Length: 300
Image (cartoon, rainbow, N blue to C red; front, side, top):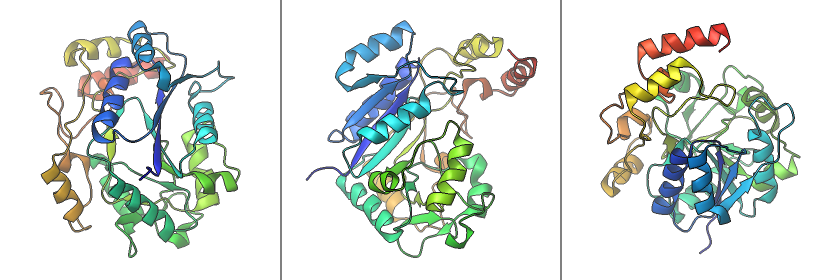
């Protein structure tokens, strides 16, 4: 049976994180097609890994005044090249955290079929620090194992969850709507809400962010906070453990009143990784974050 989902990974200068992401796909979804869209990395270690998987890599052309480099141009390219019904987007600081099987394909298809106006679906665990916002914006679906904002809140940005840069897209619906990714996540939120309405979130998510990844500002790590973070946390890439088969059963059999909060289900083998998880290394310790904020205010 052919898979319904393919994966696009968006990469820049985090070769070891990219390796973690790719290996998580090979391990948890070996029959799923994946393609790496690299934003012209120039880090030697990243370039070496891209060469190792060169048959899966597309290098983007130079962007034109894009604040996030070529990310959204690459997302549009990935959508234009998608040849599966559904396209999962990941960034290089993410990983699949459990087995992703054809049963999950069927769950994804069922969610989209239950909401024929929907263009996007979230495959991510929920951040513990944001759970109050999730609970304000989402309710349990009465159709499928998913959470979704009330459909009558279609135009209300503040009350509806409509889009993340990392998502599963319904390729046919996006193409039929003439969808093109805008050059900011906020712009895509507004566009998605007006075009497709609220975005469901999988009750049994598949992927999440790696903890304490290197933070880039304006595509560089020259700040003192970034350099100190590398010393304090160590230079080895941090990642999460895969869920065991028993843990997957626990996840999929739970009542939906138990929200899929990352910290309640996921763990890391690294002692330096603390809960609640932080997703940029400069935020992993309070004093690093203060230094980071000072540098940001000074324009470093």
